[in-house]
Image (cartoon, rainbow, N blue to C red):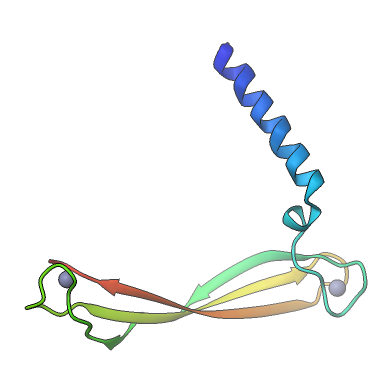
Length: 97
Ligand SMILES: [Zn+2]
Ligand SMILES: [Zn+2]
């Protein structure tokens, strides 16, 4: 019971926070129309491709695998329906040591 009240209080605080900082509550603005707001629709990833073999930070006798992939995120305007794809490069280092 007590925990539930705390959770509700936290939720109210979060809502107040979202109202106080509208930039965090709203998605990116549409560039094609005035009032539209972009909503996240979908993401697709390319395969991880190995780009390099950096020295392992745990055991310098080994090498790790540095990999990159592209993430293509589709956003759609909730007003005019225009879609925008925003791509970003993601990297990871694989270490099994
Ligand atoms: Zn729009
Ligand atoms: Zn390693």
